[in-house]
Image 1: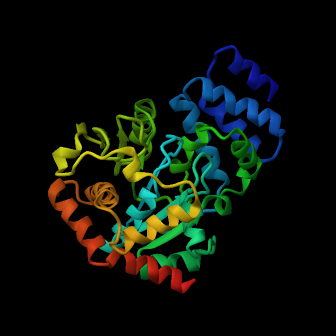
Image 2: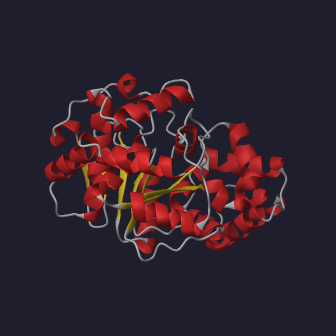
Length: 330
């Protein structure tokens, strides 16, 4: 690690192979917590390059426990986290709205490193039991159109990093890596990112690794469509900037989509949204994000139609039935 740190401290970047090698060594437990903390801190001071991120990603996918979902047409919907906005679990709710439509969602997530409630926090609190058993996950996906892959069960090598990330309490390049290392290798992906720079890096990376994707970033810093400001939408063939009003939504305030200060708050909002008992603002922000998940499957469907399909899934109870069924089956 000393040579790697000296190279980074002299303002140089890692090659694809160097990034791959150092991540493989981290996964093998070869470095101390202080060495890993120093390594992560470098990338908090300057952006990770496309080559570095590609090397890190390749190593984590090589080390992960893989699940074969190749006979399903799957999607993952997630955010990088690290935006510091403390919204409720919008992407996880989006996953169940898509499941209610009939799409197969293989969600990859973890406990919150910089927020009160990550996707794993809220699902575990509400009774979902994590597993890396392929038969169980495939059964859940087949019956309820959803399964959750809790990252620590699929990336055992990352046990050497988790404590350091938690202690640092700030976003690191692992926020960027999370959406890129889904062990189910989904066919499609909608990912929210916390900055335009990360959107650019993802776009370059996806051009070589993925053909069906949507990258989202709200221009006021959210790693999802927040409806608080215009947002950038990047697809394989084009990108555009969209205002909430363009989609027929009212512009929201931060307080309207807050996740609260406790896991209990986040879970309460989660259930109210799925039961169609939430505020109009909470419902709208989930529907807006789900509409882009639908658009990832049907790129020629209008935004208006995608929004209508998402709203029907939520308001008809279809999304809640997927959630309730999978919790009851545990």
